Image 1 (spheres, protein in one colour):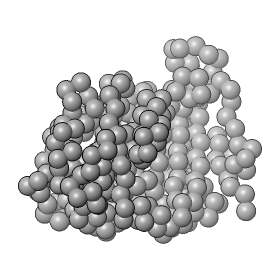
Image 2 (cartoon, protein in one colour; image 1 turned 135 degrees about the vertical axis):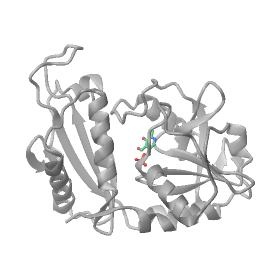
Image 3 (cartoon, helix red, strand yellow; image 1 turned 180 degrees about the vertical axis):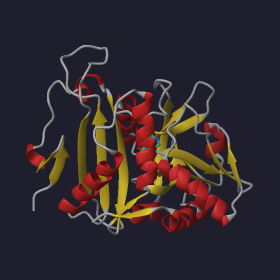
Image 4 (spheres, protein in one colour; image 1 turned 90 degrees about the vertical axis):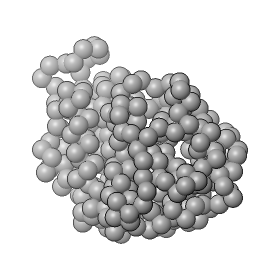
Length: 287
Ligand code: PLP
């Protein structure tokens, strides 16, 4: 069965799906996106992802390509047509197709692409058993990373640097030596006193949907929690560190810049948050 992609009103074979050469996403990174996890046939936290998409679109004065309810149906249909029970669904909205000019074109309809792909069930859970390594890198991004735009070149370079160092994620560090977030995830630590810490969701980071749901989990489990900035040094001497994102949910970090965190094994708080996540996350039947 071929993979299917949705492109501007049509369901096409993935291999043949294409956008126009003058799509502003392609020329200017003038677009936004969302990635939702699909688990056991449910799209996880879809309302929160669509709320964030609404915010990203508003911040950039891009209109909805279709009504929100219709977009929900398209997401579910793409998941269904690709028979994804465990995997990801990706949605991208750009300002549209127009002759190349920096300023906003008039009368142009935003362009919409939705794709989905399978990820072997349990592969992330297996990865969580061993954990991942991260490397730190200067945060050289613009100051509106709270908008989930497709302009991801600094993230690409940071994650490539991590890969070349034998790590799986890069943590961005601001000019004050404070960790901002990962290349495609939010960063967390558990202090030696057992307090969970993550950076406040201001303009310096993306307000992760998984991060938001984890805050509900933290409250439900009655864990000690502080929303504040933390240094690389504090992270290296923490009891635990982990990342959160829709694709990894909660992934323990076992080393930062080659230095093991605690005993170099996944921490118990991260693993219990991971287990509790799906009880709290909102599940929308995909098909
Ligand atoms: N921060 C960045 C830079 C990201 O790219 C992502 C996800 O792609 C996240 C954080 C985590 O966001 P979410 O939990 O919504 O996947």
